[in-house]
Length: 601
Image (tube, rainbow, N blue to C red; front, side, top):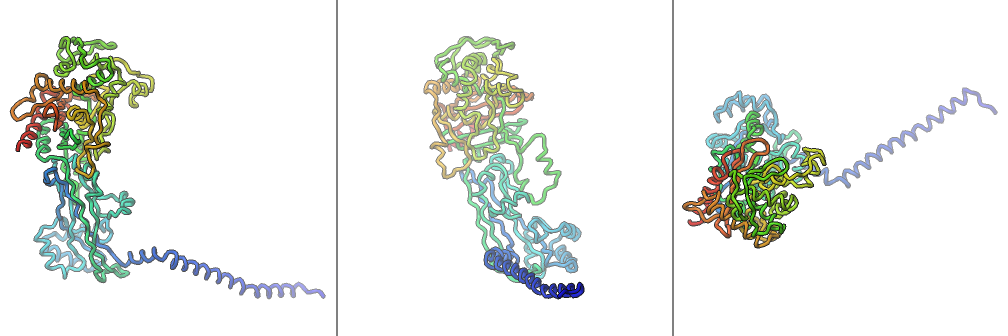
């Protein structure tokens, strides 16, 4: 029996209608299943995380910064501490636009503030912490007292304490101590995991940065319960902050003060004072300098920042750890290379003349005549260039670099703030063949005798830092040990390896250099160091051409008392022509006089 077309279409519509409830049921079951799976995931698998988020939405922590640990000199005198600064805030969630004028006028009258300034501060919006606005900084004690007497009726306003870093001696030892400044938004993304807050401060350079984890402490705060509108419902309690630990440094405030004073009339320079027995830094000064209290100001203008950071004098740059041409203070290194190589043993005597020709240039002696037939001790005593030209050219660049490496050059010293120091330069054949540090094409400017002659007397292809020179002279002072310069009296034993290591140097080499350095002071170019209140010393003067094109540098390195030194002093006067004996030696002499005075107390 056949079915007509109209009957077939009716059957198809009826079948479709019968299938629709089934499809709808499947869709409903699918959605319900998805919702159930989501609830299971949220309630069982992610329960703890969502509970934390709920608590964070319900509980606010009003942070209280910890007191940063103090920095003390070796005698317990304060180099860095903290001071309290009181700031007036308003919480905008608790003060509507309608309520603000009345609160503003009361605050202005009570605290003797200008209403228009309060309006301007409020108009800047929320602080970086996201829950309040700064209205006034550095309130006076009487203003704080007046506010607290009326605080119950000043709903939405608060006076809170900011703990700022304070350096009582201003610029003194600024490059050694360093400074702190606020954490940036970019830094906060990673530092938040370490417990830092958006209002936190962090050590930037110097000891403040090197010992950040010890000095910073832990944040505390007041826990407040808030409703969905952000309004405070009740105080849930306080979590006290934990103060940072104090840190005792090796710096001697008296020596540091003198070191800064002797640099006062110089265009630039550095003083490094070192304990040769263990590497403890007794003083480290650099000029130009800066006041670290600048970074503790709550508000600074762009003009003030530019004056510091864009100054052509670069006051934040430590000259004590930057590399310069050392001049004749380098000659003990050449002497060591000559004796240790075996080519010029301690008893060697060489004829010195007005000048010696290498390549196409006649390299002169500084007196224009030479000093006759002399040995190492007198060569150091008179600072004979032509003697050391012969030794340096005779041993070659690799032997000179070997001696330099043993004395700690061309490497970081190990000081805690090593990221700030230059490793310097001791040029050699390989360095020249590889392109002279990038300013020549490889193979285009090979090592030549003229390079070696310059290197022998610390010029052109040799650059060292005042700190490196002090470390090397400590080897001669302590009988052949390379020490690690450091600022802090930590739990490390600085007198043991790896911080103090024996230099592979023959006793005869060491003794010859020591005798020569003593002759420099007793009757040579460093004789000006002698005088009342100065212990017997050994040292070396230096006058160096500035390879960058500026005026000459003046150097003097010494240790005292002779023969077994207890103090090393390196004085460096940047671009101060006239000679190391004229400018640098008197600087070191004043430091030594202060040290001797303290030793006799």
